Amino acid sequence: MPNWFIRTYMLILTPIGTDIDRVIKVTEGHLLWDINSIYERGYTYINGRPSRGGTSKEENIIGVKSMEVYIGKYHMIFRSDVSVFYAFDEEGKLIDVAVLKEWDSI
Image (cartoon, rainbow, N blue to C red):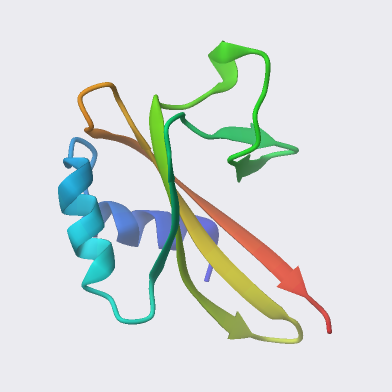
């Protein structure tokens, strides 16, 4: 599935403005999804991919809090693991969703 499709699906489940507690509840309602971490800072993009990795430039950070959720894997030629990053504002409201796919050929 393309990233835009996964992102759109996640925004249908948890629209922009959704409270962090509701996002957690929706995530925990899916048996195969797993909250990897909740961070006390937003996420950033490194080489075009969402990352919890830091940057010294505050303008590159999305949100003041973020959450990384593993939503599953699929196999085509290679295994693809899919995670979703949620960014929240200072009031704990959802402001952005990003999709990260990682491929493994082994």
